[in-house]
Image (cartoon, rainbow, N blue to C red):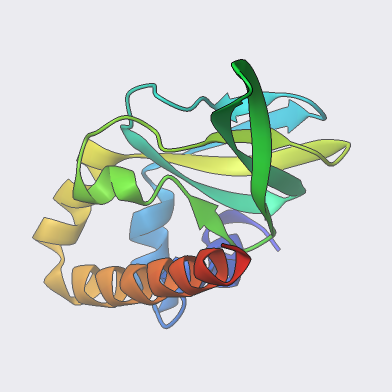
Length: 148
């Protein structure tokens, strides 16, 4: 699988046609990293969304227990999943750290500005992506609620 077709495996881009995926592909920046690489860090500016093409990442949040900082794993994501979606809604700080835990990870990084422009210029794509994004965030929220 190559080029835009790889985006067919990404949850938030499901139901898009190949022509629509080609438009998304033009704003993707491929990133390759190795085990232990921090992709995004908690409490840093949030301006990109990431989709996992290959590999596995862990989602970590910092918390203070007994006056000692630590990281707590709150989730694991792999191929076809995305993170950093909140960057599309607001430009707040990252709510978690994301680190590669497989030998290698291959990701697409998509800037908030580029994606929002594309979605605004192509409302048919925008509706599908935002609907899928809402469904994905609801699923993640439910999963997080079960762990509490």
